[in-house]
Length: 105
Image (cartoon, rainbow, N blue to C red; front, side, top):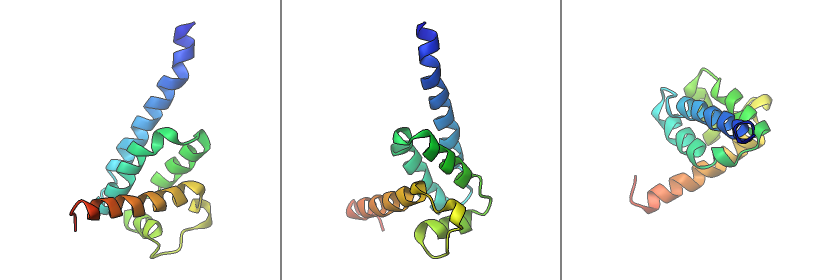
């Protein structure tokens, strides 16, 4: 019975691992530095629906465009304007502020 009960947690850990890999390896460093830490720190707390939205967002091919949506320099298509995008933007603001407070930039 323990094996059956552990499976959902294993599946979730594997899913988060795949998401983290995609978030940290976007190909555009600025996006990596927002999305990677976001997934590492916030990802485990997200509901399955939010993980679905995050996976859809990570499926976007144009990293520069995706980053522009995050920082607000380009309009985000409605299908990607989700609660997860709001969380990513808030995380980015907090993450950048913390890095600056520690002497970065």
